[in-house]
Image (cartoon, rainbow, N blue to C red; front, side):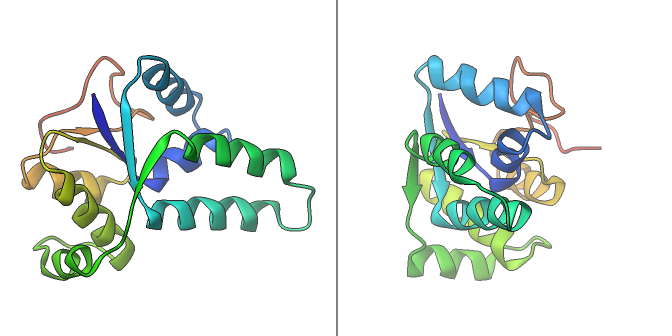
Length: 147
């Protein structure tokens, strides 16, 4: 399968907030699935972890982050992505709109993986499958808008 990863899921897995998200990521990786994320995800994850660990020795954690990103195909934030992000007709912040627009570049064969309900709602409205491994049934993506 092909998955677009939002930073919310990676952060939950990396900082121990969600063993379910970590287990899902590891399981899909072992299964040979293909992961995609925007360079925005890379920035958000690194900033979140750096800010959380500021003043602490964090080399091992940064090694774990890099190990995760070694498995992810990072997508550039191109002018086309920014143009799409500007025109999305759904209430989203700037970074979230860039994530949605980045996934749009891959087409509906990718499942959008996020813990962010607004992103999930936008992607479902655009015809994509969505999965939140933090709270959803790990056996498959949801296909209906979140309650």
